[in-house]
Length: 508
Image (cartoon, rainbow, N blue to C red; front, side, top):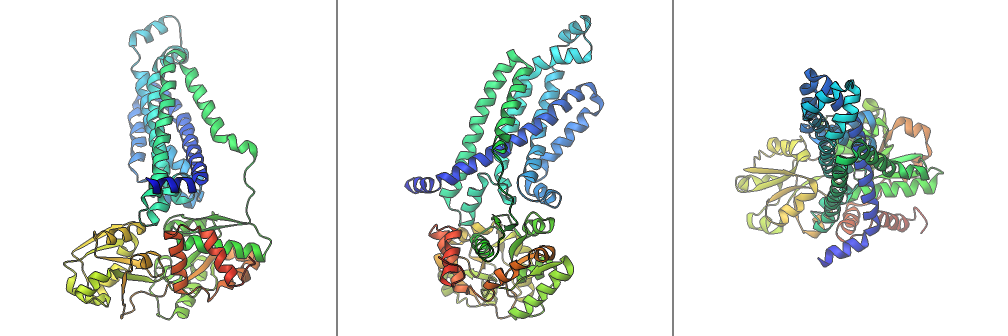
């Protein structure tokens, strides 16, 4: 509990910002979902033949995994709040639509007949009799939708939309840091509870005030959602730098930002923790970000769908550079020295017990060992699929998991061997044994800035600024910097600045 209090005190400013972002995204999605669902639900009560298919279609939307929806929206709308709001709106439609339709249909037929007998047409009967009586049911649907949206908004952090999911993802990336996860999860739950209580009050008053309660709710919600716009938005940056999940990409984009702003007149914005390779590369293609750190091996295997022609770092870089230019019209600037290649690691205890020195040595214990691999590694040719072919390995059990959970799993004995990144901080923290790769299954993975050629043509000065990192940062230094961020709770910005100052690349 004391540790959680310390984390709360250290990050309370960030927490307030994330709560506000979370609230804003949720309310915008709720308002849009309400504005779509209520009129549509009312229309369906007059067009009953199409009612069930339409309601069924909204139900199907809720069965689509949220990550799949976000991945589909990125090429169309980029990253940030726009695709997040669209996805959350889709998830919030069903409860409101179904309750609106049901609430109107359940109005006493005798009251409808009486209204018709008094000379009311369909519209007047709906507005003066049916809608006021159905409002408590409609408001109950809005309450359900609100809780659903607030809970799902945490996933929006994966595409740079912000919110409390940022803290949860940070905690997961740091080996399941419970305090950071709770710092994001508890406020999200409390926010859902508080909003549910507020909406319950509107639901109760709607029985008397009718349609006015819904109008009041929407007006208040809209003011909260768009209020910050009245004070002006942030100035648009010349360049936006994105990064995958993790401390290393965050450190690197902070270095990029400092070097660009030191050497040029350009302003730079940062979008860290955008998810895995496909999401970040999609954002680069779409134009939501302009530069991000990519690895030469990843570019060849994942983006170009090829195999490395060599295990020499410079040859791998040339293959990646030429391939990205030809296939995607993208520029790969000079790589840094460190090689964050895949590695297969186990504990020192298991390595000594079974005399494990190379990946091939795992053959003798493959039936006894449980492997903990990321989904990406499990499916890659320069990953587990390649291990099967090159080293004839087939573990008795393979558990796939998020990258941030692997180290906790091997620490607790839930798995015996994991895929790792050579420069990860947990390699120091857990004192893991990296098994040698004598068959050179894993190609070099040197980090380098990747950008669209059109961006480089527009801002050619960026090349000289970022190429100052070419050939710099050793593997040991990168591993140490990652350790300081992940386990000593230093900020990526602080660690990045300290390195650049020590190398004389920027002034203190």
